[in-house]
Length: 119
Length: 114
Image (cartoon, rainbow over all chains, first blue to last red; front, side):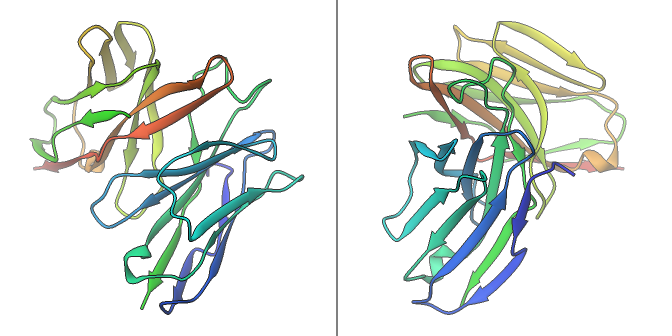
């Protein structure tokens, strides 16, 4: 158990719909990362938040948005869903001291993922 | 951006040794990670290298050469449970001293056979 909690674990919805994925980081971690993993694809970095602020952005579509709340949990919103959005969405957190860059190895701890199926 | 290459698939025999290579091209390099991911599960951290050389951790070792943009993960005494994908990931600085980003390769699927 990594200590990172993601809900829901599974989600089936239709094209054009909107969904929200939720992530609670490990206790004490200030950084939250979102990744998308399609079938047989690598982990694609979407976005990172540190202590409530957006810190880095990857190849995140304009239809997708995210935020990190004062209690440090994060939500990833996916709208106008398309078939190609079907994927595993992982949230990860890392030890964040100071400015969001860890003096330790800074490895990411991943949640179990939310499997989204768009029909 | 970052370019990370690793073989797509490898097969090895139980009890053997296997080496999974990873090459990368990036600027602002700030560490290389190896993660293990079983199908449908979350990636789990295996090793971290930021300086050149070998890091050993039980049956797993990881090597880094920053000048060559090259790393490998060495798995010894292979067990059936080692069948998984192994992801090479490179961390780069985004802004000096304040933020970094971790980019993953597409992973190497290792099949351990009897």
